[in-house]
Length: 243
Length: 243
Image 1 (cartoon, each protein chain N blue to C red):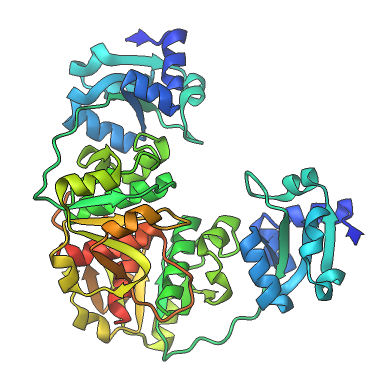
Image 2 (image 1 turned 120 degrees about the vertical axis):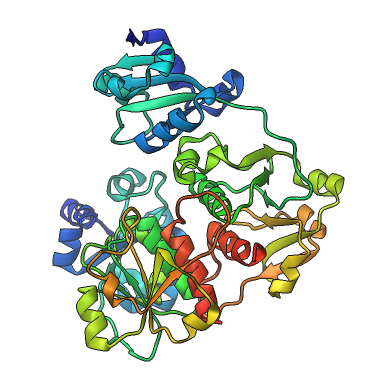
């Protein structure tokens, strides 16, 4: 059982900032359920296991060389949770698989809320959609709130950050776009679609990407709300798209 | 222009707690967009307008008798927002309309997350569904996070807190329930449904309500996520239900 050093603690805390995650190519995962899943199913992704003395007995001996213990107070200092669990993991960012042109892809144009990105990934994972391409200004996948709201789906989805206009052109994608002023969508529209593009929470899809949309799609509604949340709109399209 | 008193400030701050909102039959709304909408379209709901000196010139003179000014620092003290806007409103809770047996209703069984309740209301409002009945342990509608995530839809939706089992029996409702182990739903199932019941984020619909479900509904998916977020599942059902 190795006690964690102050320097190590400080380094882990630094990973709450995107620039440090990018530099170190590492990120933090919290929550007992997801940590247990990663230790069981993806031990190769683990750089460090950081846990309380009490929790150490739950760690498989194969992983002991990566495990460091600390007090509950020390854990609180490096955790992003209000009530930290007994464990957190530092995982290595990995090389993504190559983009598969024959599989569906979700394109996100400057989605800002980590909960929305996470929920979209969880929903896509439910429906078997495995690829996301995000504009460079979309919220970071490795933000702790994003990871939390994926409920583990980040382990199964490939996410790239790219210029979306260029990506669509290079791959010659047929794109459906969620627009408030589109046509009310029908299932047949979705059948020919390679990609679904969803826009920013306030301003929707950027002006310069709109000409790239082959199918402007709108969700019909008889009520009075001004718009739908982007994760809700995305889910409604996905459900029809995979059918 | 009346300056706000310390006592008044303290009273407003107390409304962040449910017990005080229940006692005083008042609640707080924040955000310029929604405050402007309420002042324009529902002035009768307003008890107090609390704004900075700078913002006062935006308040219609008809509403001046209800308006109190304060400094930005005082506003920060009573606001629930990280970066408070220039205004907040204290609104009066109102008597809800009576439940309309002939209109669709969403039943929520112990939904805990304010964002989920708010997003479900916003989505229902988009689809023209205007009634929610929540179990007594469901998160409070007047929680500031719930209100924020409704994006104004709380103005158009009736929400009651009731024992759901009793409510279903009394109104003899045909209930569809979102279950992970239900049958994959078809549009025809939804056509006969009076009510859609959605369960708690962790444990789903309670055991004692399950016998009340006439149509166990499941959203088909070929992927690996364990479940869908409750607001996502609700939205997918609503979209098919109103068609």
